[in-house]
Image 1 (cartoon, rainbow, N blue to C red):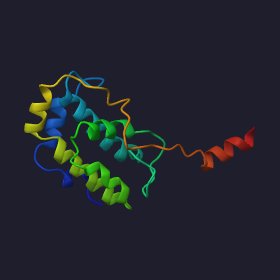
Image 2 (cartoon, one colour):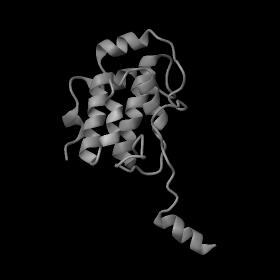
Image 3 (cartoon, helix red, strand yellow):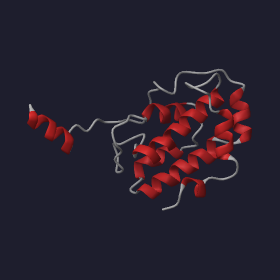
Length: 147
């Protein structure tokens, strides 16, 4: 398995650091885009969460769909996020995330997005990507037995 750094092109990580707000989603669409991409990457590598768990690759318990929906609804992903429908392996998902970062996090793109005010919220955007709760896991079964 390759690390994310091996997938990324150019100065993606440096640009994320440069445009990431100190908190929240920032004051323009460049900071919103960086925050959304960073959240998707971070939650995958730290928690195993995916932004749409209704297809083949199942994520854990955090709903990330709003981040992906914001990027998709603002036409920033060039259709990359739609590939989730065909992803069968963790490596394919990591390639998708890297392609997304390489597409969205470019100097030219962020300079243009920086001119645009915040639009909507990356934390509450609806759209084509969904997260479905899966309450039938081993922990829940054990917890239910105690009652």
